[in-house]
Structures are given as structure tokens and as C-alpha cells.
Image (cartoon, rainbow, N blue to C red; front, top):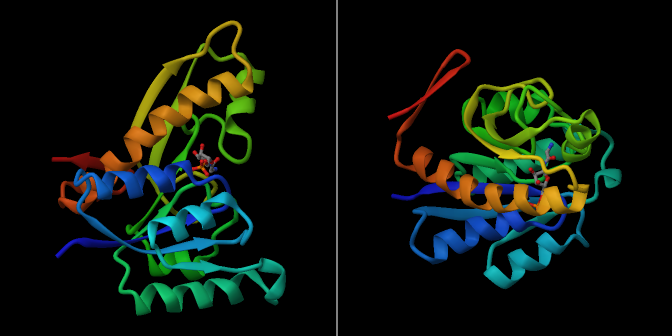
Length: 201
Ligand code: GAR
């Protein structure tokens, strides 16, 4: 039986698309049960429709609190028997409602070499700081900001003439390769967590 995943995204959805493409190409053996998106007009919603993936589209302001919409999301994840939650550019704080229910079963991709440059606009933060090397991190989600145990990282050089746009192009290319690969390791049962240390068999 394939691992059942839900992808959470807020924007363009290039990572969502890379996961869909890897599944369709037979390179990733998971079942994409649901897209969760807090911006119904975002391009990722149209991508899900094209791929035939069911979507839960919601507007946070229609709910009394973060916990209220997360309870609804949790119900959907349970209905779909989702094993792994994959955050792919989901730009909202996650509360203990979801973090605790999916502890050790929720991963995120972040466009920097964590623990450097957590939070928003990581690519811009890295450029502004003047680092010569930056990267991509895939990690488990805990209660903090981009702070959970690290599963995989890839580094890349920052060029003297890089802008946020040019650097983002190279970072996104790495993300789109790395994220489906990490998901395939989890699906194959190769990943174990021991405190902050994650090992891949
Ligand atoms: C990706 O670069 C992802 O790493 C980043 O948002 C982008 C989403 O792109 N996530 C974060 O910054 C999370 N803190 P996409 O919508 O094209 O997949």
C-alpha cells in the first residue's frame, strides 16, 4: 500500500507540481490524497485541478481562529487517512492542533541552509547577509519556526551578480529534485528520527 500524503501550499506550487510529476512518472510511490491551500486563487489550486487531486481551499478570515480551520483540516486528513503531511510553500503558522496530531509525520521544505535564515523571504535574507553559500533544507515540523529535525540539505553557491530572482531559480530547481526524493525515502521506510538526529538507511 502506498503512503498517503497531503500537500499544503499557498502560492505557485512548483514543489506540488514536482511531486505530482514524480508520481506520474513512476518515480515516487505515494498517493496524493489532498491539497490544502489557504489562498483559493493561488496557481497551486489550478495545478491540483489539472492533476485531478482533491483540494481543500479555505480562507483563514472565514474562521474564528487558526485552531478552528486547523480542526477542519485535521478532520479531512483523518477522513483521507493521510500518513504524511508535506508542507510545500504553505505560508501560515501551524498550531499544536496539527503539529501534535502529525508529530514525526509532517515535513517542510525551506529555501535556506537552516538554522540560517528561518521565516519569510529566506532567499532575500541570505542575499542581504552576503553569504557565499546557501541552500535548501527539508525538515520535520515541530512547534518552532523552521526548527525541527533536519532530514536533508543541499548547498549551492551564491554568485556576485545574483539577484533574488536569479538565486530563486537555482534554489527552486534543487527543491524540485530534493523534495520528491526525500518523500520517496520516507515512503520506503528509510528515515528514522532519534531526537534531533535523522538517519537515512
Ligand atoms: C519554496 O521555495 C519553499 O521552499 C518556500 O516557498 C516556496 C514555495 O514555492 N517555503 C518557505 O519559504 C517556507 N518558510 P512553490 O509554491 O513554487 O512550491
